[in-house]
Image (cartoon, rainbow, N blue to C red; front, side, top):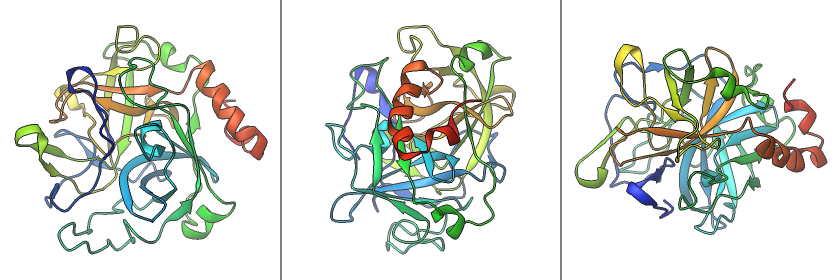
Length: 301
């Protein structure tokens, strides 16, 4: 996993999978007692990244915005501490994409995770993320462009996609208990032990709801959202591996932000997703996708 640390032990929520880090246990991604298996967001995928030698680097979550455009976090597509993109990525959309992967024997899951199956790409783009020292403006957005027909060939039943939020959509939601958002991801369930050295993860897509508590403090400043961190009244949290996963406005499929960082190893602290409903982010996305003829497919309506 990339060694990027900033003040307060702020941590990007990508997860490197190692035999010593994972303990098999019946649980899953989004955190807390209120999580549920996510069969609704079929376009939310588990994505793994690899270097030039095909060596696994880390994994994240992301969202198909069209059959050829996959949205995730910048620190996910980054393959090193300078922000250079990884050599390749592989994405699975099974709800239980990696649940039967055995990290001790390195036996792949039924889906092929983390070595085969899914859809692959070498077209990765980083908005400019390098590390978290620049909080609140971390440029933590990434794109993966897929070959035409690749998703349809591997996952013919996927016929819905996430929708990129129009500019300012998160501001329209406001803050407080009525500013409800839905999260979805394949991250860890919990960590325990000193510095979270014991990580429990099942690489299963789970979902739940929480709400926005701040969008204009020193850690957000219009770039990030701050999500409620307690599990009261049915709420959930996020953790490592949920990185890049969508923050949906309410019960919609509209993506207002991507999971970016959390405050501590235990995943009990506050979560901060990076907004994608800004003029600057969408201008960058258009600059990448328009020359490929893909921007009109995802541009907010």
